[in-house]
Amino acid sequence: MVPGEPSTTARWVAFARGLGVYESPSLVSDPHAVDLLHAPWSTVLRGAALWPRATRVAVATMDLLSRGRSRFMSYRTRVLDDVVQKAVAEGIDQVVILGAGLDARAWRLPELATARVFEVDHPDTQAYKRARIGEGRVSYVPVDFERDTAAGALVAAGLDVSRPSVVIWEGVVMYLPSAAIDATLATLHPVLATGSRLAISYSRRGSRLGRLERELVGLIVGGAGERFRHDEEPPEMRARLERQGYAVLWDEGHPDWAPRMLGKEQGWDLQRIVVCEPTASPAAPSPAP
Image (cartoon, rainbow, N blue to C red; front, side):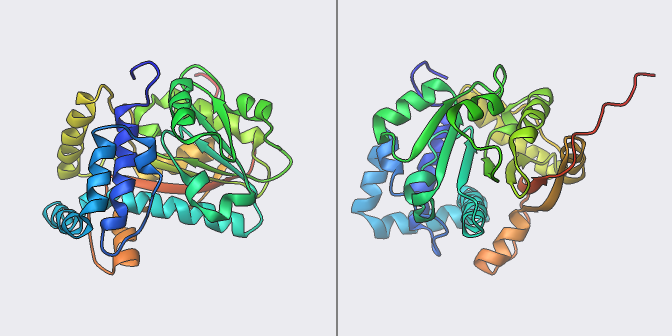
């Protein structure tokens, strides 16, 4: 990361969400993306708004050539939006976004108008975001996931541990070492009341073809100054969460989302979203032999 700036990958995600409105059918619309980005990203989004018909053709062409892969960010955003909206409809009024980046849910989802939203992220990203979009209804909670504990910072910022929360951890764990993931899960557990939900996006190890695709994406991410550090299969993720005292409610990927949202089969499955809830206390570590 450049000091005082969000990561390049955070910009990519915001840009993809900004283009989502031109997909057909559109799964997500983020009108705030253009405000959160500077040139050249914002310039392209403003140009897209001036020539929406041409933009729709370009987006449809990318969708066709990539066999649905170019729409991945829209799928992921829509699934997590649904998780948040369902939780709020059930009466949960605390929303925590871990590694928020340039996420604009607090501004674009009307369901969050009466919710308390906590955004946890690096201080540099938050300073940039505040300057471009303001405070809104958000409590900014500065944390470095590899050095700080999110739970303590959340409580200090006003999270009510006696009431359930919905927590979104999107596009982060693939950049963290395994120990940092476990540490975050463990420290979060005591502050998540019964009835809370935790939704996590994570990368699969995948088939041989999937690994080649992931390596290509990894090279692109590496060119942006970041690198993938973690992947695992759904049974491994389930075991990890259960060790930390969470019960998995569901775990889905691209092959699940495409038929439900677009009525078509698409087998690409390199990232998934798992939703879980806190249950028992984290399992004690096995004694050393």
